[in-house]
Length: 537
Ligand code: TEU
Ligand code: CA
Image 1 (cartoon, rainbow, N blue to C red):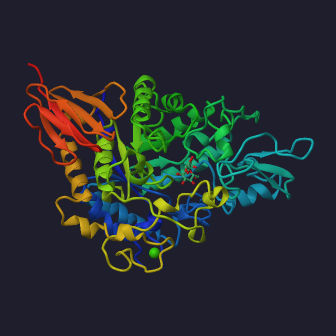
Image 2 (cartoon, rainbow, N blue to C red):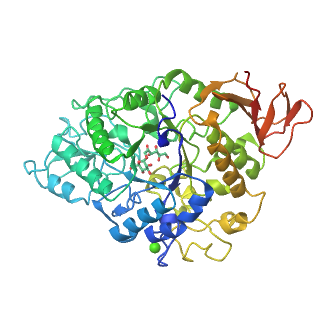
Image 3 (cartoon, helix red, strand yellow):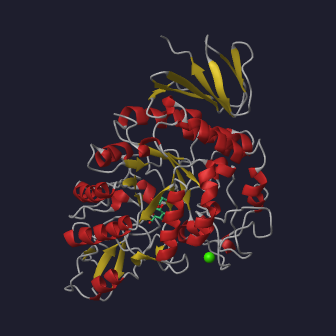
């Protein structure tokens, strides 16, 4: 049955802790800062938060490189601060999801220090070590997402180790039961502290092909989604460096543990075989609760492309619960990324909010999205993202979506420091939370209204998803539940569209506030409407 559990249609608000609220003036957001700002999220109407990593880390990948899984990095606070955060969130009715980065550790993790010390220590096989080929080159052709070979030479062991991301993010070897046990202990630690679930970073990278076979090239004309085309990684077919069937056995173990605490899992799945993988990973009640997909985080945004994404979802996702997102800490903010669709930033922000919140299943929104913020521009001198440093200037990196929150229009934007780790973007300061909060026509007010409205719509809670025909400008789909039929129409083209309003139908929501004139509703370019059809009987 659809719509049985709270998480199946939930709205998750993603927090990037470095950039949310600085409470001690060191230029970096922290846990006490998040706690202070939780009322903003509760008032917005989100139901859960996902906090990007705040664990002890050398910060080579800003926390996605963990050196102690069971502690808070001093930069972000303490375990007590975390408990206070969870307590406050629960008081406000917000669930707390944390971001477990289990596929790899930091090279500063004591496990890796031990593993690399010799070939016969207790943790010698906790990472993926392999001998060079006869000519000394890496064991196979696998590539790192962040550039170059996925293998790094280690002189002491005289072997290569695997890293799918930075060389300082060695891959844990999930073929070892002891590794599985150790990371399950990590999950248990946080469950005992009261978290409601996990966002699982790169969940399909946990295992690799034990035979280390070479990846084939991508078939001509296609490339691996989720990475820029300027990245050579895009042109390899990732059959062997991730998504191996053995992974499911581990995920089953993790699910059992989570079930014992009533906690959920949101697995991040970026894969060449996106939908097949997510079906495999979410089948039945024993694996992931839901899969976070990249299919709407693309640069491509033509209405026909968006239609194709949704059509593939209908055809291929089966019963999988898909968690949708239009923005996150890895991609250009959607208002800028899909600027090619035209309209003003404010109009795009509204239409994309309506799109996200009408999709079937749970969704994530990313801090600043509720304010309609565009991407910040970052110069090479200001660059922090290690990924960008490799691919610049073809790829400008992930800093532009990671700049600090602006809570008010003061010099520091209310962030708490005048020299934050990334500069505050002026356009964000003039569209800060306090600026928008009192204004009935602000993007923030629109999100608030939309979220409150969504909660009361049966069709948006487990209702069927019925995709309309592909079109050069209109994207259309229906949502249907017993007692309610909604028609969701998005004009993403450059000319106005007049839609006939069927007898008995009414416009429940229009992105620019328009009402129907007689039995016609006008959709200006970059506008959207939710129309309720009369239900027979
Ligand atoms: O991202 C996984 C991932 O595949 C990304 O590399 C993505 O393709 C890219 O960032 C798109 O620009 C997760 C985290 O979300 C990311 O922040 C981490 O850097 C990465 O894992 C490594 O842990
Ligand atoms: Ca701080």
